[in-house]
Length: 343
Image 1 (cartoon, rainbow, N blue to C red):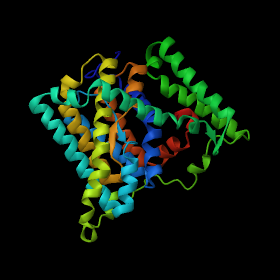
Image 2 (image 1 turned 45 degrees about the horizontal axis):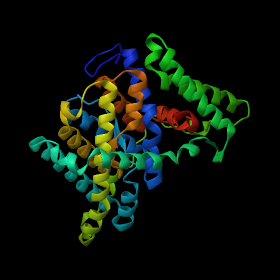
Image 3 (image 1 turned 180 degrees about the horizontal axis):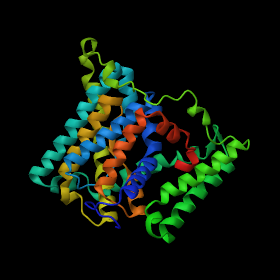
């Protein structure tokens, strides 16, 4: 690592590294609420608050970005159909209790019992299935205006090549920012092509743009008075199995990040604290946006490429993600970024 967990850095480098983390995690953060049919901005604030909660729970010793969980999509859509926003909120409590319960048990009695239930032979296939399922979205990223495009594919591959070359051959300041530089280069090319008559960037998002936008939070729609409490067993069946799967994903992500940064996060700060932090982050995300949160492989990949794992970068990235949800110009730039550059 060029910058380790507790290392500070110049402000300029801190801001750019944090922005790189945001852009790497942005696609999935906004994709999940779109699939579930709920507003995007609250999910971005949910990712912000979730990451900050996670950082507090882990005492800033686990540089992981926390954001929208794709694994819970089916549960969220099912709960919305059963009992609306209120049902999803109860699902959030179920997730939080499961994670915190497992995390507390690990803190009290270690991980030997969990290793027997979720051995590498179990975690490996589970994470592989999640990854293969998410891989089906890759061709969608190369679409231009809803259609598959060789131009979109070419620019997407160009983005990847630029990022790889900067990571391998870059020197000094630019070596920390392979993803950010690659995406910005592709964005500039796409804007130029758009102005020349090839519509790659949706510039309409900058029209009628408001400086400050107030999100429509999920908790504003709760109605516990008319909620049918007989639905609790169905909600347990929706959220508990997926919660167990996501615990396996959580362990895998943290072992991967441990290998990248050279610090075993399952021991320091410990798997108990990371699970508790993830569970509370998920509950907070659901209360704000109906979308639970999870650890992000995109964040791990960005850390590996940039060789920067400073907790200050992750914390600032969370703040930027939250600011983008209410600050119109920043959100417009992120939303207008072509999917082939981000994907």
